[in-house]
Image (cartoon, rainbow, N blue to C red; front, top):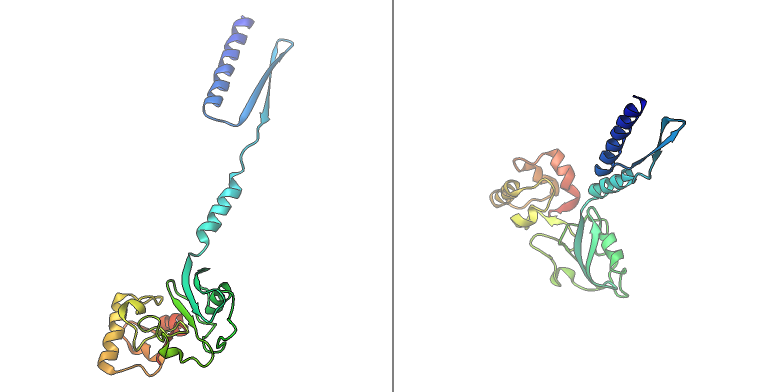
Length: 207
């Protein structure tokens, strides 16, 4: 009778261990017999630490997307540089190796925010920069700001919070009322309030 019970228990444990192995569990079960009684010892195996990997993945997802800008003119290493979103002209200058020997170091606003695909031109001393490339794209000044008096719809849409409809409204306003005399005048355009202006005021000019 004892033997039958013992054999059945042994068979059940064997099936249980086999099931653990098939499902990929990371526990090893060691079964021993001493004095006709069954003893079980469970030994923890090394379990891969997925928590650290999850934190790394989460951090990667939170990282802002990078932008690429073309730095040219009086810099040591002109070319396309990659920077984190939210970088400023000073960061692009540093990536390009700094000013060259004859650069006009005071012409470009180094504090201006950069946008993806922007071209940043640093003139040499005595150079008439506006005539030498001047506006690098429609409505964009050499210091990276968007001129709300001359920018086309595509350029205006690069501003945060400005979509196609608001860009068209800006263009319609200046065509009807004339040029903006101050960047703050953009709040006269329907749909552009003070909260939106606060987001774009450092990115625009009305020169």
